[in-house]
Length: 473
Ligand SMILES: [Mg+2]
Image 1 (cartoon, rainbow, N blue to C red):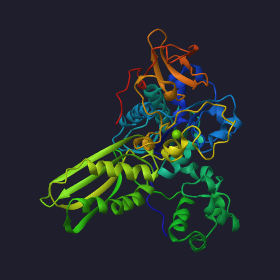
Image 2 (image 1 turned 135 degrees about the vertical axis):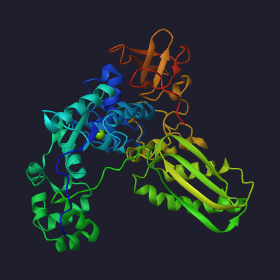
Image 3 (image 1 turned 90 degrees about the vertical axis):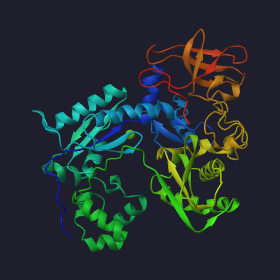
């Protein structure tokens, strides 16, 4: 195997926000700055989607159960994710990249590659470019980000991880070995715990160890694809281009039928097509927010209908149900020759949110809920497990007069006298603790109010400019 032609300059950037969801919460809720914040499911099966650096310092990690995270860091504030706000901040971060180049490839809501090869670095060289990019993103979005640069995607991504938090690392080609070789193989892309264990058995712990292994040993231990890939990675061989993807990624499957289908026959084929689409979705993180069903009629007209869920989910039952609802929206006036199912608004983070979409997360209804351990009052997640209830990850209502059962920690509210605030917790006595503050007001006071007598409105999240975002979906 021969080395690919590598770029001569470290012109590939990887920009990644730090503790993104938690950082947005801290940006918008000044009382949370400098404090441990956990974003994730508040129900009994809740999982941490993001932990602020203050919470990480106490041992909390993403994907940990919320229960153990609370135990590790009892003083942490726990809030549910607000995807509307995160999407708006994400757009700002991405815009900082797009101002420099069209070659931007988002990887998830808060990270992207960019090919800056067309830029001419100033007197500070590529580190100057990286610092300017970082400052621009922070200025646009107001949340901390880190930037890594290298001559490949591989090195740029590892460099941004090394730059965290709020830093910049540029790996020049002649520094690449010094950067890569001491790294643990576990920190490499595509090395999971199973591969890491197999490699450990043959004495491979670092990239340097890896580089010492012949190709056929690696393919024998890890299989053809993974072995070949790691052989290349160990040498920093990576010439993949930055793929311009302006629109969000999607994943799906289509099926053209041998004969045209009529009426109920179409619905009968939906599970098979959805199943195929799931296999593709799996390769893109497994979770989606929007499900689109496409129908092509015998006369070749094509109709698409979509159902958007309140937030991304990996819950297959929920996605299947949404596909069914999307198909119901299509008027089957003609015989059908093609049926397609596709997923949009893909998210890797959403895999961690499965619990939020689970109907079993209703207060008292969860099989795993230990009685008497309810330190936080039932958060009202999917409080009414009925038809659409299973698809509602956060509160059923996100606009209108607040009821105690809708008072999920982290949701935005408005009060005519106290202004804008966010729900800290619903108390057992029927009242709700609310902190009234925005990025513009500075840290605000917490008040305990009774939603039965006080005019508290559930309102939409604010964007990075402090303007209210339109209702999603
Ligand atoms: Mg990030």
